[in-house]
Image (cartoon, rainbow, N blue to C red):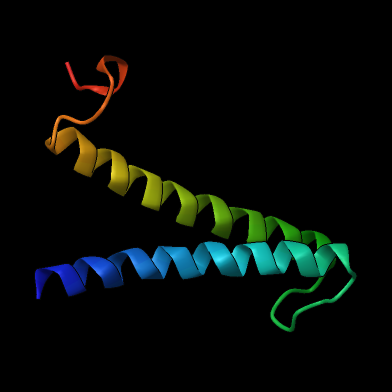
Length: 78
């Protein structure tokens, strides 16, 4: 049960990052999505979604590897 919950916790930021990539790609092709008033705002929102989702997944993996002592010395907490 705990593994399923962890999978769901990782899927949500992954989907958020994927949606951010979609928004940025749509801006490059000139496709405006409905909740955004302009293409520039749509690109910035997509960039924020991508950075938040990607950093959450990266932080989760770093935290897990620190617990298992599988990181280099420069990433270990002092």
